[in-house]
Image 1: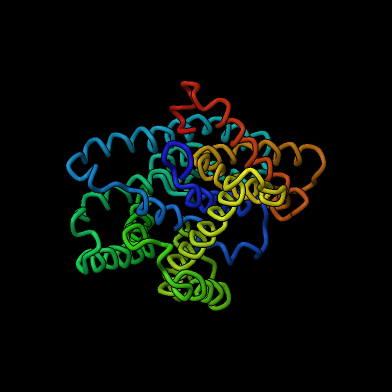
Image 2: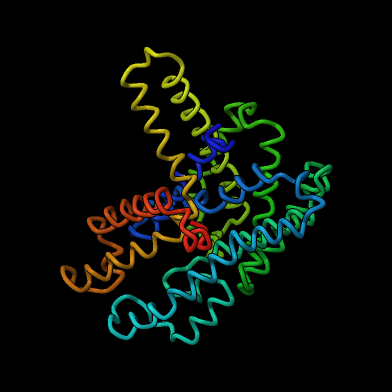
Length: 353
């Protein structure tokens, strides 16, 4: 456990996932296909793992209000803050890919779907808000792992998939329904104990599903409702991949912490191992800051490159790994620094940083 009762290995898993999100937004190519089923689903699985149903079961309004403050207020503040900047960029720097007219972009902010948003597409925040609240209302704490709950989650996931294939619902409601199985998986892992799963279920089968997804199925993208030609495989790979990453981090972070703090004679190698596991956990703790701030870093650097060294458009920069790698690194480090040193500033607290 880390400070304030946080689970260090779970934070580390979320840290790896959010780093993958930043990299996918900054570097083009097929490299990210293997991790694509993990990036966003793992946050729903982690939510199920940590959600205290007993605490909130009879305080649903309090939970609703807390999530409004934590998710919806930052979403609307950031989107509305960036909207005029984005519109001006479209007028004076047409190569950045801001073809969507400003009024349509403003309507997209209210709708909350990534394809209708400006470049700072924070679709995940309202979608996550809906997903958690749906789960709290529909899954009783005393029967959350019953067969009825499993069937309910599968039906909701199937309904979300079907709705999303027809229409992208406001605030990603179809995605929130699709993700109910992920949240329930997190509850199941917490109840059964991730560490109690055999290697077949926590390592080998999830790895097989990820490999099959990347070779047989198409690209997995929750925001675009892209689940490939075999959505059941994509669904299973998302669950299995999340379990795999969580289990790996559980093993690595626990071992590194034990080596580094077990006795005064811990060597330099153990110290380096502890640091290597500590930074992913730090990224996980600051995942909200990374998610909402990395687009600003990406946009500032991309605009500077288009105005100086690179002759092309936004896609040109996206497909240059020489530009994408530093954009990714700075897109992680700057938000982490801002969150660590300035998170208590009033305006940043309202932005969820």
